[in-house]
Amino acid sequence: MSRALKCLFGKLVLLGGVLSDGALIGAENRFVIQGNNRLAVVAAEGAIEWEMPWGGIHDVHVRADGNILVQQGKSKVVEIDRATRKVVWSYDSATANGNSGKKVEVHAFQPLDDDRLMIAESGPARIIEIDRSGKLLHEVRLKVEHPNPHTDTRLVRKLAGGNYLVCHEGDGAVREYDPTGKIVWEYPVPLFGREPQGGHGLEAFGNKAFSAVRLANGNTLITTGNGHGVLEVTPEKKIVWQIQQNDLPGITLAWVTTLEVLPNGNYVIGNCHAGPDNPVLIELDPKTKRVVWRYDGFKEFGNSVSNTQLLDLAGKTLR
Image (tube, rainbow, N blue to C red; front, side, top):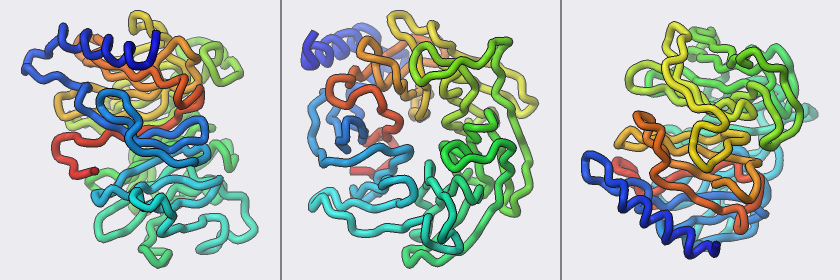
């Protein structure tokens, strides 16, 4: 089936499944995506409205002015002016603020208020906050049981209250740190009685947590990487909701990566290394576990789409 027909089919399915509030969710969202050495913005109907050549990433953010913050290489965070496709700002964690000579990889960063930037540095095992000049403003040391510059962290997010929610891929755990570096909550991602299995695709298995979101009810939503699923966990560490590899009809989950919660409560999850027969991006209604939108971008972006960010959501001013 051609990409255009897939997009049309997706819209027909969506129109046949209007949510209770009458909103047609998913069809109106653009998103930024990277894969096949392309960084792009995909329009709601599936057309690529902007792109430029760019290598692999593990995090991406679009600023309110439309500029893109993205990883370049293993250790650098840069800002791209969308209009000119030029890098207009950069910070290299491999050479700055005490890291010269160290093995450093960056797999997470986040723009903060007052033009600050949070960066999680794997290898040094720390979170830093810097200003636009690169000045170190704050530092949090991380607990890492299986240190490795490639797996110390995946996505890290600063919470509204000031704590940091950290996915430790190599440790198979999510830890919440306060601003002093004290661990205030920790959740080891379970293997559910299975043995780990190597690889990156559908055949793999493990507990390599990729992203975590703190929900309004205080629970934590976790994508389990090669665990092929999503968990909702209470502060008491009880699983109250989950999806596993084969729970979504017609879709097989592989390395489950990014996670966004929409204003209507739906979840949008990334499905990396899942092959040509599965979508790279999925929106589902968590109450019914019904897929209300999918993006089949294998042809355009390949098998290693690890990160996306939705645009045009209520409450956001991204362009």
